[in-house]
Image (cartoon, rainbow, N blue to C red):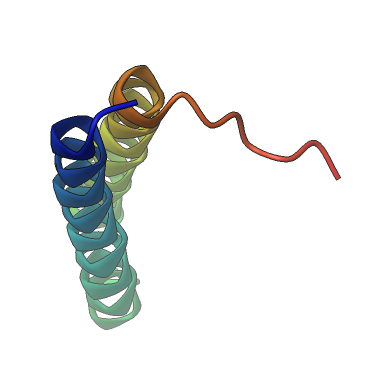
Length: 72
């Protein structure tokens, strides 16, 4: 594995962290709009999209660092 690949994996990881941060913000927003079912549905869809982004970023990171997640 070359250093450049590890650098790419690191940047991908940081983007994944951003997705987790976004989810936290949306979860906070959910508590504020809990009495509005339409808003809740929209925010839940956004959270679902963010989770999808995390999965895709993890797959992409594996391409560059070739380290499988531990199964424990």
